[in-house]
Amino acid sequence: MLMIVGLGNFGSKYANTYHNLGFLAVDKLADTLNIKVHRAECKSLTGLLSLNDEKIVLAKPQTYMNLSGDAVKELLAKYKASSRDMIVIYDDLDLPRFSVRARSAGGPGTHNGARNIVSEIGTQEFFRVRIGIGDSDEDKREYVLSSITNSDMLKFDEVLTGLAGTLKEYIIKRDEDKLLRDLNSKDGIK
Image 1: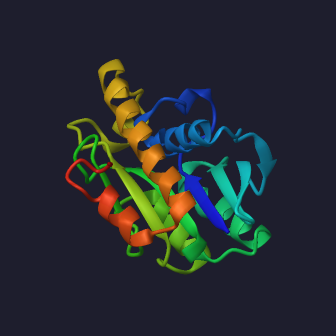
Image 2: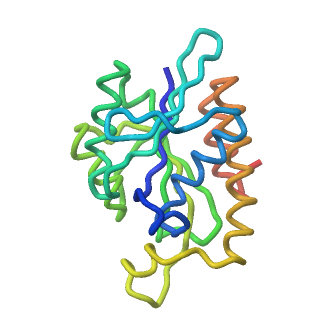
């Protein structure tokens, strides 16, 4: 069992905002795997894939960002998965724009969605992939909820394409050490 959860806010108002990069990453991975993420369950939209007798679940919680843990907790229970079977992808103000970093466990930092997941599932023991959006002189809340500029979207599309390729390789080979090395390389992706 592997669950890959992208964090964001539901609705067209937030579709292409910096705070929805987790959703965009899951969409890109779903395209790469040729599956649809449209099934409504556990306060989420999900897509399912079976590979070598293993179930792969892609999920986009349909709660607001700071309630993401509600959906994640329900998904883990439904699929009888542990937090170690999960990768959570989200934006990070504290990382340089367009960078990608991964950790196999640890604190949620300043991200409210990650904080809520830790609070709801009662552990920091889950893999996370953070996509840097850099900081801004704007109010942080306004910045993360603002639309991604066209020039930034072109670069983020490259980053997300690379991330999807790296995650697809991980799904097939299941080498967590290699995944960490690839995502934490200088470019953040292979």
